[in-house]
Length: 314
Image (cartoon, rainbow, N blue to C red; front, side):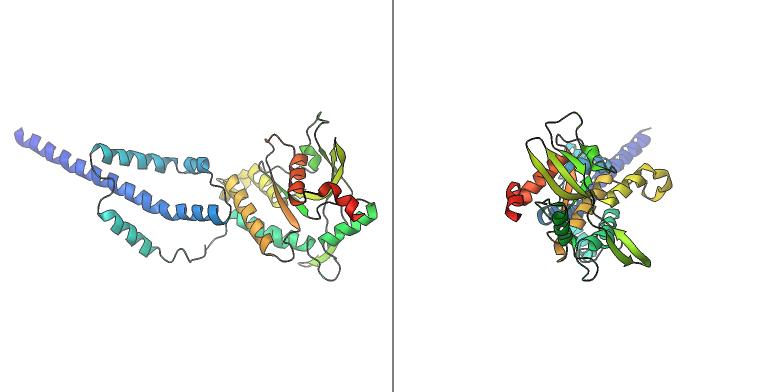
């Protein structure tokens, strides 16, 4: 009986040591694995103006965080150091094994990045710059529209609305606040002149941009070219019809929008033909402001003297 008890005690000691070892290496493994993505997130925040969404990060890594906390508590209550002498060696070994990953380009393109590239090359690059042949360019197109209708666009840029909800209505007046005459509102105008091009085997393909006026209770209307980003509308339909797209069933909408917005902003800034001619506008339908107010704020930020633009151009 004494021999049996001694065996049990030895087994318990072995299990205890094994548990402590597992707990320690779980802490090591999690810290080492998160070091690189954490550095990438910090770099994006500092250099690409990306917003760190800690609540979403915690939600996605909930199980990992719980495992890390439990393992750390096991070490703490066992009165053992959280980091042993072997941690530095393991961390250095990990960095050496993955030293090429920092310079290696990703083998796949994220959904949001692909959307941004497709939207720029498939649409913006057709409606913004002049082709030197048929189309005079977006800003000249607005100038012709102004002369024809005797109006003024205080900011000659294409405002592209990116909605948090992904929903993009057929008419932007949908985002007006009903029964609120004290707030500005959007009304559609005649579209800008059509753009006709031969693209990818399609003869005389037509593109056009929408013009709107912002009616204000305390001033004259403000004219602008504005529309929703069509890839966001497509994403809305994809999410709505998840049963058809099992490959992206677990898509993170916010992550896709962040990737789309960041990539499109960078591409536009790098393009000599489109830089300063296209403005992205993020709109949260649950915010206190309606879209017309958000657009007026954006116009005011770009052109603080926009109220006097019409008189100056006249």
